[in-house]
Length: 441
Image (cartoon, rainbow, N blue to C red; front, top):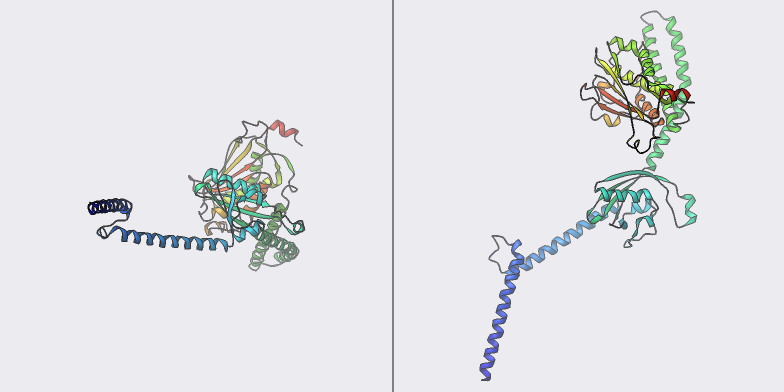
């Protein structure tokens, strides 16, 4: 009887064990089904499971190694990088970011609000905008570092930073930081050196021109043509020096150079065209104006005259013969004007020619100083400058842009879709009515 019970219990135990193995194999089969292939279906499940686990462990090690490699690259990168979570807490930053933002008190592993560590509302705002819009955002501002050590404050200098925010999963944001102050300092030093050189060049250039004028009246043809050529080159150098000095003065102090008064735009453009008309007649060009006849703006008349003189001279140089140069004036209102009636309208002027236009590669650089661009627009088709054409030196459009910026306006260069020529769109604020302009002082 005892033996019978033992055998019966053993049979029940073995049956239960076999049932467990069957259930386990079924479960493993369901788990490993995505990893199964036609070549290894016949393999036992447990060896296959070990192989898959080993593969996953190897992949995990590879991912950890790649992650460490990327982190090392970011840590030694020449630009700063920091990463914040969905609550704007600093998760990690590289060494460059710690130096730029003076984050010596932050240690890896600490999780603190970014605004507590870096008192920069511009940076905090950039992070918020990147997260809200889920698109990369860029911002440039003047950063004033702070320090917990009062003794360091006199040695800490403000710097211009450019930051680019990148949205990451789970509400996190990565920010790349670039300290632009060294570049700006180099540019300022370069401009200062060029200005000093330009000041020194004015006197000898004037003396050379006086000598050339004396020779011009004493030499007979054909020898005098060499003096004429010398005069043209000297005038070009004088124009270059004067343009550089003027541009430097406007950039250094844009508002003090302006003498604001009411200016009637249509008559100003007409006056500029009359000055350039001898050049236009040689190519049978005409000016076509469209827009209101009586538009008054608060501006420096001499400076705005210079703006249209440069732009129309360029249009004449590069227009095809027997075509029109279009000047379209429009009065526009700000998008906030319906909320605040005190905001005055602004003037938009479009200058369109039928010339060669700009190449796509040149458009982003049109207003950079000394940029000459495409050879098709580098040399004027007018070979004789004796009528008074503005000598090109690569500074004209840069000066135009600075004058308009000083007035609170703007300028944009495009190619017109219909004429194929250059399309200059400029804006001037502070449009005033005729009656108001008479009482303006």
